[in-house]
Image 1 (cartoon, rainbow, N blue to C red):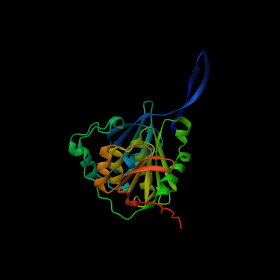
Image 2: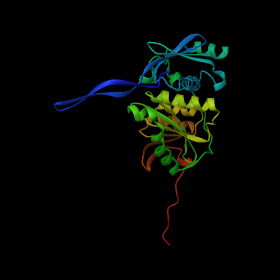
Image 3: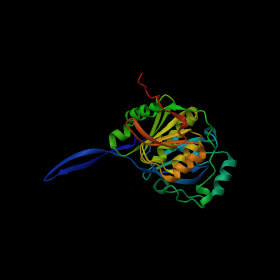
Length: 272
């Protein structure tokens, strides 16, 4: 199985000098997802944690309702990429065929193969109130996230999605060249391990796009925090779904765009 990193020749040039060496380069390969013998999607992804990816993609796309419906996962490598074959219940497969979607290249635009506006704005569940964190938990989680990204440390070319407990402890991280893929891998890993989605929050080393919000809301994750900017559509969808959306996390600063009541601010000290 590939590690997600290739060691390739490179040459560093500065003015009139040149230095030959090798570099660690992030792998990006086509990954075909084959359901019940029929290829449904081909994604460009890092060829690691592909079982997690298959489960997470199936859940966030609504292909299955729970991880246990994904069975008999087999991963094969070839000269041109990777193939993940899996079995799902017959009623799920019938519904999948009816969607008639071609998702090849989805990591590039997010909507390739979507047939209608209704398919883009699919109904999202409403996230119940109750979960809350201290503001410092977000800061602690992002401070710890960097130490859990070995592929990024080696290559500088991959995104990460992490899961943090309410106190900011980072419990799980997945990486991929595609930000959507990294999040799907994280969701799949959590589902396979039986980790509840409603008692922690997700971290993203990317922008918070509408699709990332849709994935979080689909799994009823109560809070999503991103290191970069949100889009206006992401803010709208998060607000409608009852999801707390924070972004621009930098050191001890961050911006909250929706449902900030889940983030408790420290009480300011008073002078006697």
